[in-house]
Length: 206
Image 1 (cartoon, one colour):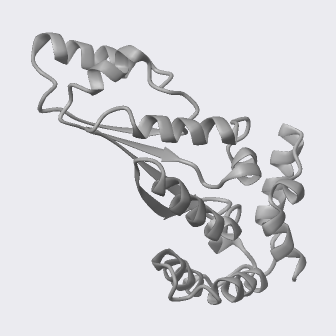
Image 2: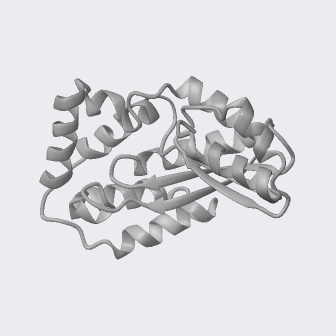
């Protein structure tokens, strides 16, 4: 939404041809609302899908998506969902070591917000790289399996991640992701143990 290119691109199509058969897909972190000019162009399109990447709520969101503000992004999600009938807003989450403990809270937030807004969907993907669930120790994986087992059968997403955790063989220790979060904290002046208390509680169990 910060880039002028989508607006320029759609304006050109609008002038030279027509937007009525155009489908637009945006991926955004939700920090910025589209401009009035862009909104007017999107309303002319056949269909617009806006996928907002969250990966957490409240303090967890603000740590993972630093320096964004959770209240501001939450408000933007709701406001974007009411722009026009042809504009659909959905939520996406990349789940890894940093936020597997936030899974229930994320889904509960979505259930509440979708009941009073026009946010239409929520999807979950697996984080790749350093914070992949594959980089957690076997003992930590067991903690998460135990935590999620009490929710088994209640939500499809829980069953999805219980199955995925079962496919993770686990590392000998947790040095890989711990060093990564410590590096982030040092660079940003943050503290993951305070911002991600659910992850810290899981880690303390081992």
